Length: 257
Image 1 (cartoon, rainbow, N blue to C red):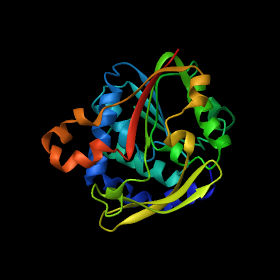
Image 2 (cartoon, rainbow, N blue to C red):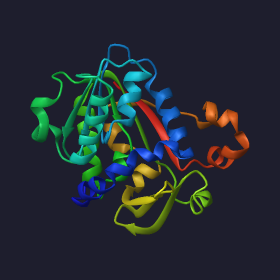
Image 3 (spheres, helix red, strand yellow):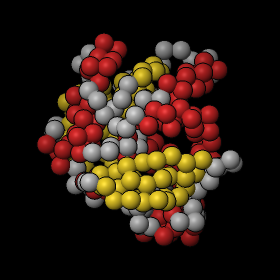
C-alpha cells in the first residue's frame, strides 16, 4: 500500500463519517449487515476499518463479542476511539495501527487474537493495492487470521466504467482514471458538504472477480450479496435501477475451508 494512503486518510478523517448520509453508503451499510449475519459471541477482525463504521455495525446489529479494527491512519483510529468513548463503551473495539499490505504479524502480531478470528472484514482495502504484491499481502493477512470455517466479507469496487458515477447519482464519483501495470489508478469523490476525495488503485484481478490468490489460500463458497434484495432498493427500485443493473461496488462473502 502506498505511503500516501496514510497521509490522505489522516487528512480526510474528520469528514469521513459524513458519507453515511449518501445513498451509496446506505446501500453499502445494508449489504454489509446482510453479509455479517449473526455474529453473536464471535470475534471480528476489521482490516482497513477506519473510524469503525462497520465495526460498530458488527457489534450493534450483528451482536459480535469484540472487533479489532486495523487501519493505516492513526487519525482515523483516534476518531473511532473517541466515538466509542462517547458511547460509554469500553473493550468491545480495539484500535490497531498497521498497513494491511504488509504482514500484520510483523507489525502488530502481539496484539492480534491468538488462533485467529471467526470473521474477517476487509472493506475497500483491495482498492488500495498498488501492485499484485500488495494484493497478495492483503489476502495473506486475511487467510492467516481467519479461523478454519470462518467467514470473510468485504466491499470493493466492481466496475469503474458506469455512467451514473460521472454525475454522482448515488453520492460518489470516479474520475482521473489511469491504467497502471495490472490495474487502474483513479480518484473517488464524495458529494458531502463539503465534498472531499482521495486516490485509489484497483487491480484488474479484483475488478474482474478473478480472486486467484484467495482461492489458492483456501477461501471457498464465494458469493456476491445481491443488491436487489436490499430494503433500500425495494423501497425505491426506480432510483436504484441503474445500480442493480450494473453495480459499481460489490459485497462479497466467502468461507475458509
